[in-house]
Every structure is written in C-alpha cells, then in structure tokens.
Image 1 (tube, rainbow, N blue to C red):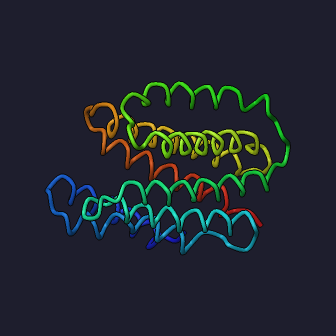
Image 2 (image 1 turned 120 degrees about the vertical axis):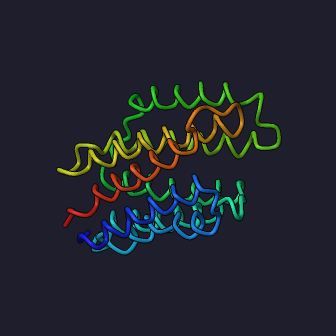
Length: 205
C-alpha cells in the first residue's frame, strides 16, 4: 500500500470515530467502509491465498455496511462475516493442510466457554451465534496451524486473535452487557485484525 492509501485508510478510521462521537450518522456511515475498500484494492491477488483473503475482505465490507447504525441488519451482517471467516479458513488451510486436531482443543474450549456464557441471553439467535462461534474459533485454530508456513503467515494468526477479541466484545455487549468504550474497542480491534491479515498476504509471491 502506498502512502496515499494509508492516508485514506486512516481517514476512514478517523471519519468513523468523528461521526460516532459527534452523532453524525452520515459521516459515520460513509466512513466505515473506507478501510476495507482500501484493503480490497491493494491486497495482492496474484495467488490463491490472496484471492481467498480478498473475497473475505469483500464479505467483511458487506458486513460492515449491514451492521452500520443506519441499517443495523445484525443477522445478515452476521451471515456476511461468517462467510468472510470461512474464506479465511480456506485460505489458511491452503497454506497448511496439516490436520492438527489436538491443536484445536484450546480454541474450541474458548468457544465453548464463550457460548455457555452467552446462551442464556441469546433467545432466537442461539443457533446462528453457536454456528458463528464454531466458525470463528475454527478460523483462529487454522490461523495458528499455518502461522509458520511463510515469513509473514504469523501476521494472519495475530490478526485472527484480534478478530476473535473484536467479535467476543460484540457478543458480550450485544447479548449480555455493555462496558466502557465497548464499541470503540470493538471497531479498533476489528480494523487491526483486518490489516494484519492483509499484511500476511501482501508480500507473498
């Protein structure tokens, strides 16, 4: 990414926070998609890994739009991000095809604990959230397995960690209880996650 692209990325981030803190819904809505649009444009698509990550970015962008306050289509946004995570899983498996089932245990344990905590508050969203938790923990596990497949692959694992933190915070404040700076922390960790996943592909040949 060139300097102008970084400027636009940060402009989108800054614009979103300005719109959020000032209550300007128009600026907030228009700014939110900008960081993902930049990543989609500049991600290296010259290999299968890059193509899959780019598709994941596209579905993430759709999720950003659906979850924007102006629309607030949570279920459809959930489905869009779930599809993005599936694309990331396929990309990570393409990097490292080792089954590594034993390595999955701590990740699925985390997912199980999170779901148990959320379950009493989910109601009609129980099945969609369960499926989402399974998918994101699978994404984190496969990011861990592939972390040594290249010089930059570890960034994908760190990005997956940030993504899991971000989605965990969303689940907590949406279904359980709000906490200080919950939305700000959620979107910051989300953008960090996507950028780190972007780094994991941009230098691949």
